[in-house]
Length: 177
Ligand code: NI
Image (tube, rainbow, N blue to C red; front, side, top):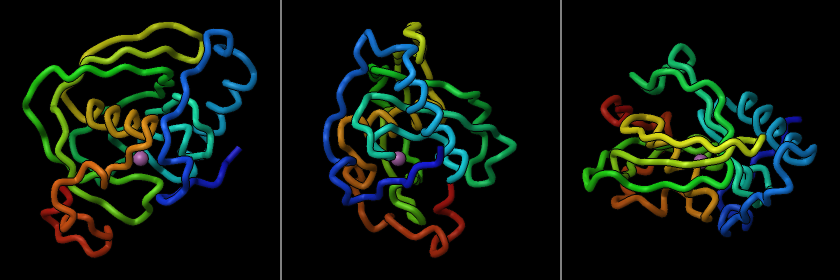
């Protein structure tokens, strides 16, 4: 079911979300939440979505994108659907990368955010299976952005220079990097 997206200013987006309990994995309520997130993300065309963005303060994130679908980002590769529950992230490097981020909760806007370039991650899927890995590319960026939602952080809170916060249709071409 497509659910209305919560936008910046909504209290749901500003609080720490709670862990999914062990007994909730593979249960109807969690699986329905994941379906709602997926329907809503497909409807809006994002690369990732976090449960607080549809008003559910649980530590659940979906990430899914395909190079062929995106004209906004170059060289992102493919990321078939990942259901990410109770994630943990560690930074692998002091090196930072700057990227012009967007967010379904701030429609029409992008802003440059500096984040650590490489992460190690761990998370559970909807069946309670543990996944782990490392990434130094677009996935690391999306993962950090989405996991921030679980702690009540929106990307403008991470921006060092708010002058790059811009409406997409007002951007110059070099801002789309
Ligand atoms: Ni977002």
